[in-house]
Length: 444
Image 1 (cartoon, rainbow, N blue to C red):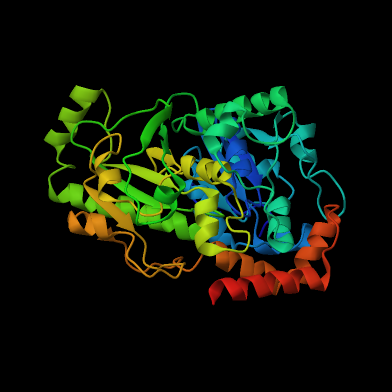
Image 2 (image 1 turned 90 degrees about the vertical axis):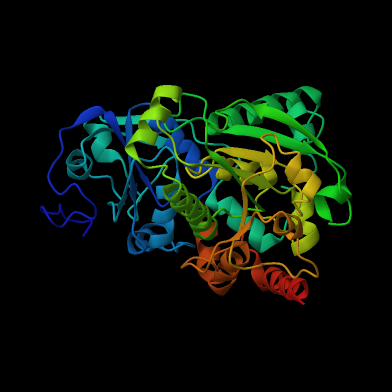
């Protein structure tokens, strides 16, 4: 399909008729394997260059032919792109070598890509045609993150990516290098958090970002209840009149279709509740616009993100594969989220929930499965307050960090070859056996 220009009725997604080409409509494309914050950063920068963003996503077959195996299926990768707040339209089966007829069909004048080189199986530039046409723009590649790097962490079982205290890292008090290097990195990380907290245009304030400071015991266990301290890291849009505050929490490691579908289902459930209380009636809509100047949804979703040490305490091995900064950025870029709390406790106690920046939430949602063996219910407090809600089974409920690691291990030789092509040294059978043994121990 990607070798030819489709005819009307054969394009992977509507519109089926050619659209007027506009410089305000931007095209980006790629594999988007793992929805890590590097991909989101590229989409954010591209979105800021126009008013709409079309995202082309290569097929599993094209990626295999040109680069190697994907970890996530096309359907899972499309779900991740759909969930990015800066994406306007996802276009699956986009050509691996970017095609002028394809981008023009969807009305895009410019193609945007990072400042790294992308080649096809013949070693030729994937963007040679759009570059020759003067329709190519370069943005800065997000440093320190890539699919190749994440696969390496899984296979090597490293923990060097862990962050002990995000607050200290942002202040330049934790990390490698001298004082000035740490402070420079902290400022860059803080700026990235602010960027990812922007609205769907990428230009205006969007999500609120908070940190919660408490003892390690309060963050990790259920036996210590502390009010802790909430500090605002980024000012965004607070809850609007009559919006109900909804709380979710988790590790959100290797942010994937499982997390995304859960958050989508939370939003859907809140919308159904809103419909029942007349939220979508015309008079209610007009009143919201009159008061706030714009319309908005019935729910304000706040996501608590756990520290690295908290997740590692419960899951072992070298989980989380992504550190709290990386995981937080993944959550921030998701269109279903309105606020993020870094270093949220594993157990949302009554005092914690009542102390949240916008007060006790109207609902606390949890997904259909537990990925960690627990001897107690971490959601006993919201159950007692009658605000606990459970999201039922869904198609992606088993797609989590553990599942993704298992996919890597099962196809280890193919991923090893992919790493080798990228210049990463092979790990050998012993390293893989060690990972498998650590996984078995953690599951025992």
